[in-house]
Image (cartoon, rainbow, N blue to C red; front, side):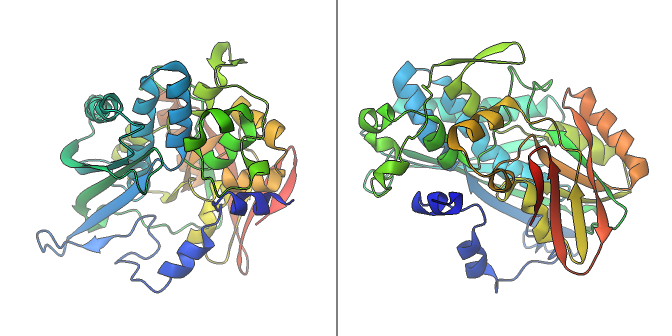
Length: 390
């Protein structure tokens, strides 16, 4: 069975073709090639300003958090889920330069029979803690409340989502205009940033359905039937060999397999705020490698060839997932970030400054590729496992 078929039968998609088809005729905002939709300033009516609103969730990462919490009683995994959902919004908005003065609201749907109040409390309290942590780095994020609904008839365990809103001067919006000759600075998704408390395996909030089922052992299907869709073919449910609390050594850290895969989605907000503050020009685009993994940039280029030929050494997390799943390497690069989740397209003479700023925050950075002109749009990955064209 092909990997694409496995993903489809599990009810997920790396490309979201159906979603893109559904929205293709919608208005793309005042800057169509910006990473986020940008609207006129409907709030104050100022023609020099614009509004940005974004919504996203932690996806099926909540199912893995549910498993780990049930197995261990460790409530801290829900803090990571809150961060996952927030960062999927905040770092998308950061790609257009919106890194400050952001309003945040939550929408949580739970099955009350399975998810008690202590879980909701952990999520909400960590939301406040994350906001306070970002404030220490000069980032203004403000809570506007939210909705928590008991919807057990439609949610198996819990769904955690956030909506963000920002207002900024139009002239400060970064609109993707990726140029031939640009280099690509990749910001690592793994390691331990200055604003993180422990090693991050590099997982974002994409590919979790695959990572969970392909890595974890079959025993979890019978122990926790609420953790997966019963319509999924049985032979695709928890097909791996690993146990949640099985130990694995990563860069001198002994981690549970479950905790490694549950690594919270790293935010790059502190890094990017300093980049925007200190580098006034020479940046032509930013791409958050979320849905679509290393191919995400293909949606924001025209008559360009993006060549990624100097990627980070593959972090142990993604090696683990591939070893367990045997997923084709080409598919791996399309589903997972594979080591860097933020890309900055810039003049070569700006790259060193950007990398130095990133390293100040203990986030490794390197030039991972370049851009060439061509007819049509292509992303080329040159990896130790082969060359892949998308």
